[in-house]
Structures are given as C-alpha cells and as structure tokens.
Length: 229
Image (tube, rainbow, N blue to C red; front, top):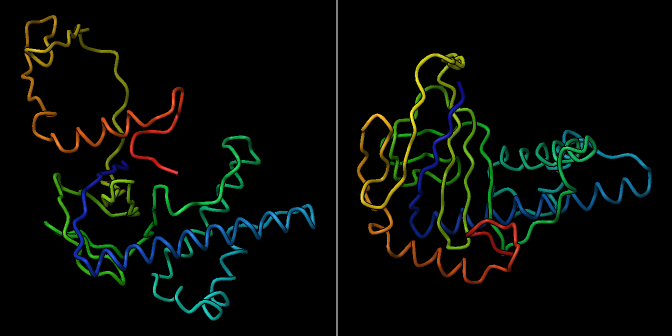
C-alpha cells in the first residue's frame, strides 16, 4: 500500500542556494517545454509526448550549461510530468496547464536515489539535508517531492510502498456519534473523551502567518493558504 509522509527540511545556507537553483532550472524547463508544445500544436496540429521533449535535455544542457547543476532525473521528470499534464487535459480530466512563476509555490521531484535516515535526507547533488522526520518511513521509497511555500519553508513529501495489501472495507461493528467541543477535543456517544491539546497555542508564529495570509486573500478565491502568484 502506498503511503505519503510529509517532513520539514532544514537545509544550511549552501543547500538552500542549491535547492533554489534547482527549482529555477526545473521551472525554466517546464516553461520551455510548454512553449514548445504550444508552438508545435499550432503549426502541425499535433502535440509532443513527454518522452519526445525529454530527448531535448542533452542539447539544452549544451546551450545552457547551468542546467547541468541540477540532478538529471529531476529534469527528466519535468518532461514526463508535462506529458501527463497534456494527456489529462485532452482527456478532460484537468484544466490547461499554465506557465510557472518564481513567485508561486516551487517544487521538484526525485523519482529515485533519495535516502532517508533518522534526521536527514540524502538528495543527489545536494547532500545530507537535515529533516524533522516525525514518523517512520516504511517500505520502499518510490518518489520524493521537494517543495517550497511562500513563507520559504521547505518540505519533502516521501511516497513509499510498504507492500501490504490495502484493507478491505467492512460494514461490521457499531456506529458511534462524535461531538466536537472546546474543553474536550471530542466526546463520543459511548462516553469516551479525547483531550484538546490546543495545537494552535504551541505554534503562535505559524498561526499569525496563516492569519496574515487569510486577511490578504480575495473573496471567493480558491487558492489555498500559502500559495502566491
């Protein structure tokens, strides 16, 4: 069964610079491929697959040497994700994709070769990045997605496969009503009580940031908190 664990990263200054450069390279490649696909479709009426644009990476590295600083499989994944995005659009499963901005959420994906230890992640071309791993990562790691929000916080979403069967749905057992409150977090109809840990009181700074982001949001906006641009 596939599981995702999202952990907070705490890179040093040099690693922050390397990650920022890698975000920029992946963003530039996405925009380049999107523009190429748009032009190709207008001129020929046919699109390009993710595998076709992936073949352009070696030549692009010769023309733009700074692309070589970014892990090659991250660049390849950008092209493959572009192909999937086009397929989803033509199958009417998603809206038409947009060009990426440096002012919005940044992300890149490692399809393999990331190692997870107790207190850090080993990323190709970046090294050992300190991480707050709050729960064990079980099974084989499939992919790791690195992202940065508008508060410049870095996270890693680790997708792993524990090779366990997904539990089947069951209609057995009894129904229990749940009442949410302030003094107790929840009280069930069978008399069980769950303590209110008052998580917001433990993270006042983060709570203030979210309140500021909420106050700047436009009415009826669908953008989640922390997303800019």
